Length: 285
Image 1 (spheres, rainbow, N blue to C red):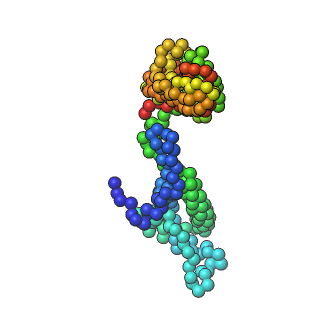
Image 2 (spheres, one colour):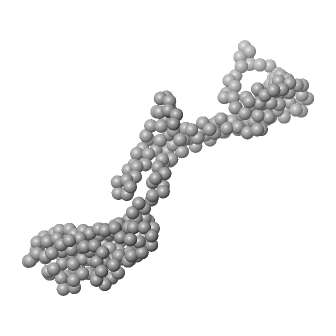
Image 3 (spheres, rainbow, N blue to C red):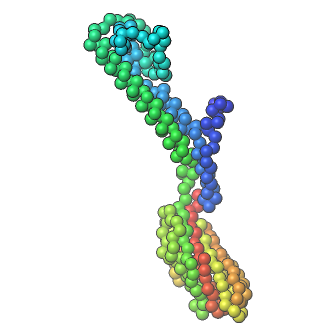
């Protein structure tokens, strides 16, 4: 790959960098100016065959007599000509251009070329304005992403439940997580999800557990196939929490698509208040 000249590196400096560490894979977005500058340059130098033909046939000497007042500027000074158009410059250099450009033309044709000059100059200024406007717009809004991120955007879901309750007499039960924080291509029905067929998915579930005064209890989070609690997919392991205390339970597993996954919690003794219930699901990439 050709090396970028040092004097252009400043245009490609990072304007803004945004990272999302919650993404898997980790995603970084960078805004820079170099692509927008390249697009502006290509727009400036682009030309059509009409520009080439205009440069090839435009008369030169015969148009000078149509200047306002038929006299030049005071002192013989010429005004600025502006930036030459690439297409017309090419047309002037083509073989035979001098013959056509120096030909005599009638008064009506002269007037048409003068009108064309005015229109083309106006269009040129409008082009410069449009290019500058688009450059700053593209610079400010263009997001540079890698192709890997484009091809590997995972399906994901985060659901939340503020509170629920559990009692040891009922064994395994499913706390509610009804609030969808974000959802990209997955379904969630308060306590379970039907994973789409094909591929694998990482499913995790956790919550905060508060026990009442008295004896402590073993507490555990689990993921089950369907809703009978007879087919555990993954158990998070027992966590002992003292009476009157607070603790957390957590479970996670890679699960094949096409499975109905149900979240569940149990405690061995007494009553448990659950809070900050969350479920996170993401397709493996």
